[in-house]
Image (cartoon, rainbow, N blue to C red):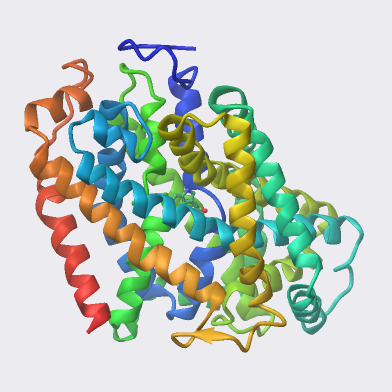
Amino acid sequence: MKSDAGHNSRDHFSSQYGALVAIVGSAVGLGNIWRFPYIAGVYGGGAIILLYIVFVLIMGRPLMLTELTLGRLGQGNAYGAFQRMNAPGMGRLIGSMGILAAFIIMSFYTAIGGWTMAYIFKSASGGFAGASSQQIQQIFSDFVSHPVWPIVWQALFLLATMYVVMRGVSKGIEKFSRLMMPLLLLLLVVMGIRAITLPGGMDGLKFLFKPDLSKLNPESVMAALGQVFFSLSLGMGAILTYGSYLSKDADIVKSSKYVTIADTVISLLASIAIFPAVFAFGLDPTSGPGLLFETLPNVFGQMPAGQVFSFIFFFLVFIAALTSAMSLHEVVVAFAVEEFGMRRPVAAWLISLLIMALGVFCSLSLGIMSDFTLFGKSVFDLMDFISSNILLPAGGLCMAIFLGYVLSRPVVETEITSGGRYRPHLAVFYFLVRYVVPIAVFLIFLNGIC
Ligand code: TRP
């Protein structure tokens, strides 16, 4: 374990590669494989994907570097790091929004994580073998609307997350991520190739990559923005917390670049595996959160040894979800441990119970509680909307302003370059953080609210 700058008591990633994989592990998850395709489908494909990529470049990447810088400079959790940077007010604001967001995201993230676990078992037991696409849709809707099973799987997913978080950063999170992420990438490529070569599959690619700009409206612009934050784990201090575990000589400019590229490539690959199947099997691209679970079993049915592939695939998605959920969980655990002196296992249990208390309603809102709506949205959609479209962009806005205007530029540059060891060009970064991110987030908010 590397310890530096006198912060010997804090756990750190054991190597730069390990740290990179862990950050990729946080970023790559259900956001890429489940949420990106379904959002792209709901908002009409090509145009929102193009917009998403633009947002990643002008906001995602600079904010990734911002959070890594703030975490490593402040050497603390989303709340405490700011105390150490002499900005307690900022810490209270960003820390509390971040912790609230972590709870809310976990409440539905664990529900979907649970679905992936259930699908591992359904694949293994041959549940999809020979099923028509209608039957596959039926299997999905029967499953999610059941009052008990989704909640049991959700709890199991949460327990798995908690187990890893309790083992600590380098032995738990880092080790898990390192093993599984490359495998996931490989399998997505295989699935993508199979999907494109399905009869009628090309229509899926057209849907994805032919932008129809008339489909953009304030709502879809906001959705693209929310997806950037969600997918790159930005805006609530998760990347900041991981940044605090990085060694002082790690090249964070490079890390932010690789993570952003890997995350975007995986989202696109997942869509390339899913949309051709949507069109080849005559399914509905706007079907929402069920999209992944209703389409891919059809593709497996068209592959030799589909059952085995299906099993491996959902297993890898589960691992990807787990490495992301750990980072969400870790934000709150690090906060409770460092700010309240709680013991790690106690904090982990307590937080899990609170997540579950909210999570049950998210699960049920897709079944027996589906008629219950607030502000015209189901509990599930509302939790997703509040966190991704409001709390995360607001947190990102605050962090950009803090780095861009409050911290002195020499301090920031020394941290980013590891004291002059690396020589990145920071002019564009500064421009984006000071002007583009705040103005864009603000305008999109305004546009979305009015
Ligand atoms: N980025 C993860 C995904 O795409 C989810 C996630 C993990 C997250 N940590 C986060 C989202 C922090 C927002 C903030 O699945």
